[in-house]
Structures are given as structure tokens and as C-alpha cells.
Amino acid sequence: MRSTRPLFSFSFWLHHLLVANPAFTFDGVGIESDYEKLLLDYGMRVANWVDLRGFAAERLGVGELRNAGLKRLANAVLGKELQKPKRVTMSRWDNQWLSYDQIQYVAVDAFISYEIARQLNLRGA
Image (cartoon, rainbow, N blue to C red):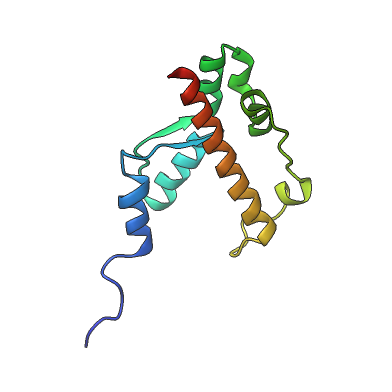
């Protein structure tokens, strides 16, 4: 009897083509805890990651940014006010399925993190 399971799972490809690929860098705030969770829960090692707090503090010469959240970094680096509705931030993130608002929230966080890293890289060039 032949198996109908794929040879490699989506998580395999996600890990080997993206997360473990040294060509990619993952940026975020407090990203070390996300890295640890991926490693402990799923055995995924992230090849390159940068916590934007230290990166921004170094590039901008503002030591207080080492303790900043994404809202503060977005303001300091991009000059933008980031809206983070409490009803979404305090919602159930452990549900099997995320709501549309949660997905939008995560997508905005990812995009803002990318833009902050991009701007900081441009300033250092």
C-alpha cells in the first residue's frame, strides 16, 4: 500500500528553505524568545535574527531604545504612530485559529519590523 503523505512536510520546507537559511535575517522586538520557542517546541534553528532594540540603539545612538517596544521604535525610526488595539493584543493567541484582526496585527508587526530594519541598514550604509 502506497502512502499518500508528502515526502516532506510544510514545516520541513519552512525550516530548511526559510528559517534555517543564512540568506535571510529575521528582525523583531524581543525576538530571542520567539527563537527559543521555535527551537524548543519545533526543533527549528533560526540562522540569523536581530533584536531591533539593540540595533536601533546602536545606529541612532539612543541607549533608551534598548528597552523600547515596537511602537516606540516605529516612532523613533520611521516617525510613525503604530496603533495596537488592546482588544487584539489581549485576545486569545493560543486558539487553534487566529482571527482576521490577529492575522492583520501580526502582518503589520512583521512589516513594521522589516521597515525599521531596512531604514536602520540604510542609515548605517
